[in-house]
Image 1 (cartoon, rainbow, N blue to C red):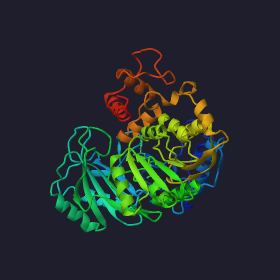
Image 2: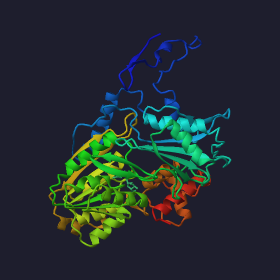
Image 3: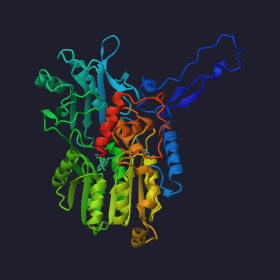
Image 4: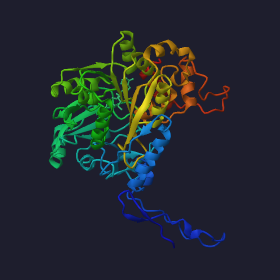
Length: 510
Ligand SMILES: C[S@@+](CC[C@H](N)C(=O)[O-])C[C@H]1O[C@@H](n2cnc3c(N)ncnc32)[C@H](O)[C@@H]1O
């Protein structure tokens, strides 16, 4: 039997797939069983959380760098990819879903990608090890505290998920217990028992999610049962408050490198007015504030904005203002007021930016735009838009924020090309543009992205267009529409319809 020698992510040898052993066998001859390579993770094939785990890390880096170069080549040059020195256990935000296996044993882990099949996970190579240990302890306490795990099918039980957020620099730890109803029996004793095993836990909160949805966190305000209800962390010498629902990058080691590049690309001199769009808890803007005259930040999530304001105070920064608003709406208002903005940082979600944001960006005409993106596809789409209208990509760089997965983070510097802003204003007309990506409030990819992020469900263009019709929203001609009202076409299931409607509401379409 031929052995294929391969090396996994950390360079250790392992036995590769033995698929050649049956080659040349005539049919009917006894076949030797095909032995699959042994992954470094026992649930690698079932979980789907990481796709590249069994590939040597250097190879992963080359693969990602090459792919990014192919995607961005036509726009400008890329600097060498920024890999991670120790690419394991980098996730400082860890989520586990609770349930039971077929024998009735309590399990915790992740849903297999695209399904509601719960894969038990004890130790994940991507996740912070303390967070995993805390989740195991919660699991071990459930029986003695008579806490039932929630069952999606019967809508019965209490504990749905546990989320752990770890401050990399401070070591502070927040545990979020996501419950189907507000009362946790013997909550004080539960916290005591948990902290006895993990005295490093600095806060415990209850989040109630009583909806039949795959969204992890419920919308209501959290109930704090231990500590201050938030944790602090440090990045680039600034302190940041992290609340249960605020966005905070999951890989703090690489985040410092990412933000460092963004600030470097901005080349601030201390005289600029800077906008930090999609600012989350204000991280990039606060770090930039020491190098700029004035910074404004805009963010949709109310809790994140509150954290951003507190972060400014905590870091004694007075030249920054935060606004809670849709970034596109905010940009339009700035453009209408003829505000002068010198540099824009933009770090939108995976779905990328919006038509409204980008058109107003053109009107504002900042000298430099630093685009931070976690999705090269939407980055390319938005770059196409901006580079056709006077901006030029000077340089960019890929940062490995998510080793072992296919995901890539990118920072790109755009600056004003030869065309002067006056000319752009005259030539720029919505009628002439291909607006297919930007119809009806949100694009199909944005709706899909939102639904996936909030419910874990994948929805097709067909389903979105069906629900658009039901809601009386115009359906653009560029999308995958049914050619006829053929009743044999799959109809959007109620769960997905609900999720799509929630997305429409979020994007202000209904
Ligand atoms: C990738 S995160 C970046 C956050 C921040 N720059 C950071 O590095 O921590 C994207 C942020 O955009 C926010 N967001 C999503 N849609 C938005 C919108 N339409 N307007 C403003 N902010 C939005 C999200 O709440 C999230 O905080």
